[in-house]
Image (cartoon, rainbow, N blue to C red):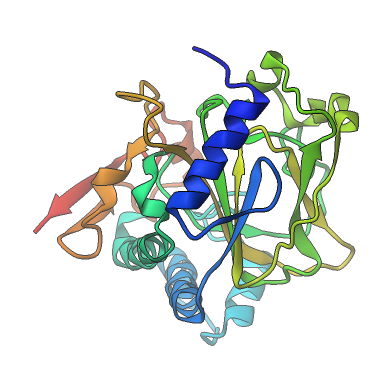
Length: 301
């Protein structure tokens, strides 16, 4: 498969910006605004999804429905459908809340015209909570400078959408980098551990990109980035979803990739239902060959 050079990648992002509401910030980084209506809707539906995770995990809870209370509860006792990295894994009992969340996300994509350029999502969109890192970092922790192309389920053709939804984005955020020279080595796109990013970090410099509520960022997968967690920072709720634009593949051969057409009617004429229950442990679900996000079906009505 041909590896796109720097100028080709720059041109492809320019084309995406012309077709959407994005504005190119650097050669490989673009930024956009999300309207208050769509942000509020995402906040409400993501809060309901998190609350349903608590209720589904434990029948008896003592909690109010404020976002802060929900996040405090989750930080103290992680529900079984939320991974140690903060990924919210849907179960069949909260399929409704997940579908309402998906619907609000796709409405945002339609409003910004991003849905018109997306061919595949690298995996079904998920909500993530980023906590303050207290434990020792793993070799693939997002606190290391890395590229999204380094994961086995991604490709060097992808882009990533970063959308902060709620929380402490001032002290818990994503930092972006741009290359000092307009040259990209082919080997940089091969799967590798995030901890190894330090070897090429000196070839990059920080990009002046604001990560804050009301904004979203779309970057070419050649863009290095990392999570910054300042001392005593609070949790951040966000979406970091990789996608592949139209025109790259006739058919993706990677199993976890989901054609955007599957989602067009979610929340309108169809719903996505997961087979796994809260009665099954997350460890058992994730140990299966086909993980929970592949263990799903779309019901049309």
